Amino acid sequence: MSSSIDSCTFVIFGSTGNLSRIKLMPALYQLDAAGQLPDNCRILATGRRPWDRERWLSEVREMLQEGVKSGVDTEVLKRFESRLDYFLGEIGDADMYVRLADFLARQPDVSSNIAFYLSIRPAEFGVVTESLSRAGLLKEDNGWRRVVIEKPFGYDLESAQALQIRLARFLDEHQIYRIDHYLGKETVRNVLVFRFANVMLEPLWNRNYIDHVQITHSEHFGVGSRAPYYDGAGALRDMIQSHLLQLLTLVAMEPPVSMEAEALRDEKVKVLKSVRPIPANAVHSHAFRAQYGAGRVGGKTVKGYLEEDGVPHDSVTETYAALKVYVDNWRWRGVPFYLRTGKRMAEGVSSIMIRFRQPPTQFFRDTQIQQMERNWVVLGIQPCECLRIQLTAKVPGLEMQTREVSLDAGFRDQSDVYADAYEGLLLDIMEGDRSLFLRYDEVEYAWRIVDPILRVWSTERDFITSYPAGSWGPEESRRLFDRDIDYWRHSLKIAT
Image (cartoon, rainbow, N blue to C red; front, side, top):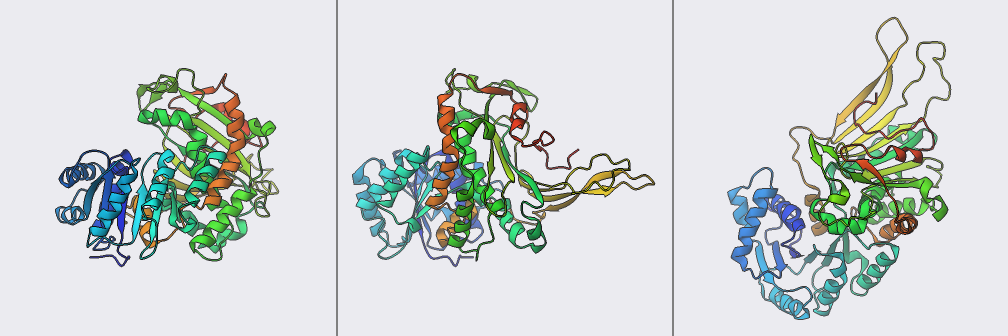
C-alpha cells in the first residue's frame, strides 16, 4: 500500500534527541505501517555524533521498540529502514550545509520536496535557517521547502518578534510550520467538529446561556530532567501561552467561511485580538501562580520543586498557573474564561468544561429542591477522550427530588485505530495543510496576552505560594472566580 501524497524528503536536525526518540521516529514508522508515506519518501537524520548509517539504524530500532506500543512489524521495519540515512555535521558549521546540499543533489531517489524539521533549541532556529538559505536549500525552484519549528516561539513578546524578523529574512510565511503537538490530538480536532457540525448547539454558544468556561491541563509528574529548561520558562509560558490559549480560540471562534487553513486561522486570531488586555495593576485579580512542595503522588512521597535536581534553591518559578481572561466581542462579552495548568497535581487531565447559566426563575422554590446544579458540557481531551453533557433530572418516586445525569459520548470506539498527535501533524506537513500550525500573528497576540503578567511576576522575587504535590493546587486560586459559588471542576464525571 502506498500513499497518494507527493514524494518528499524529511531532514531532521536534532535527530538523536528526546523528541526524535519518543515522538518523531515512532510517528514516521506508524505512518509507514499505515501506508501513508510515499514510496520514495526518504528520512535523513543529521547529527554531530560520529555514526554511520548502520549505527543510526540500530538506534532507530531501539526507538521503535520503546515508542511503538502496538509492536514492530518485521516487514514494515524493513521498508522503513530502507528510507533512512544519516548525515554527520555540526549545526553551527556553515560548511556542513554546503555538504548537505551536495549530498541531497547527488541522491538519485531523493525528492526535491524537502521538509526540514528543527528538533533543536529555539536559540538555534535562526542559525540553522540562515545557513540553509545560504546553501541554497530553501529555494523553491523545483519543489517545495518547509521548515518545521517546535515551541517555544520566543521567550516573551520581544524575543518572539525578534525571532520572526530573523526567520522572515530567509523564509516566506507559507514555508514556516510552527508545530504545537497539542493541536494534533484527536479530541482537540474534534472540538471543531463538535462546534460546527452540530447546529443544535450554535444558538446556545454565547453569553446569553454560558456562564463561564474552564480549560485545564494538569500533570501528575514533576519537572524531571527538564528542570534547567523549565525553571527558565514556568507554567505560564510552557502551557498557557501556547496550548491553552489555542484551546480557547477553538472554543470561542466564529464559524470560519471554510475549513481552509487561512480561514480557520483568521478566526482564531480574531479571538486572540479580542481578549481584554490585563493592565499591570490588575494582574493579581486575573492571574495566580504557585509552586509544588513535597507531597504524595500515587502512594509515594515525592520532592518539592525546590528539591528537584537542577532547580535553584531560591527559585520562584511557577509550576502552577491560573488565568482569567475575557473575550470582548459580541458573542462572549462578560463571560470569563478560566485557564489553569499545574505539575504534581492529583491527576493528569486535559479538559474543556463549559458551565451554563441558571434558569432565570426558580420554578421549584416551594419543593424540596433547594439548589439545582447548573448544566455542563465537558470535553475530555486526555486521558479520557469523551463528550459529556450534564443535565438535571427528577429522581423516580413521589417526592420532587432531582439528581444529575450525564449524556456520554466516547469519541473512540474499540475498533478505532489510535493515532498519536505527531502522526497527523507530520502528515499535514507533507500535504501542505497548515490548519493546525500556528501563523505568526497567532503567536504574537498570544504573547501580548501573557506578557504583562510575566513582567509583573518577574519583579516579585520574594515569595510564591506553594501547594502540596498530589493535590489539585492552591485553594487560593479560587479568588479568580467572579462569584463565590463558582469552583474549579476537577473531574470529568458528574459533579457531586
